[in-house]
Length: 94
Image 1 (cartoon, rainbow, N blue to C red):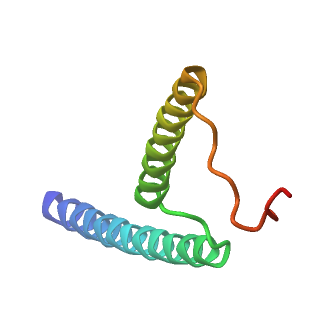
Image 2 (image 1 turned 180 degrees about the vertical axis):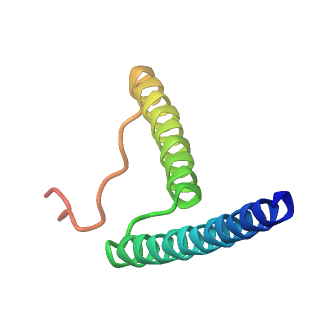
């Protein structure tokens, strides 16, 4: 009788093992489906990737620094008494 009960337990263990494998497959399939749907939604939202955002952020910081340097240079020239260049469209004074 011992052999019979072992066989039943072996069959139950095999059944549980197969059920766990099926459950893992279903989980993997659900994860893949969810990831695919999330990527599609994000693509449709036309969001910017982190790398692109960081590159534009760095470009803006450089432009800001250049503007500040040019502003300081203009202020220094104006302090020395330099006059801005006349516009070519101005009529000559008579």
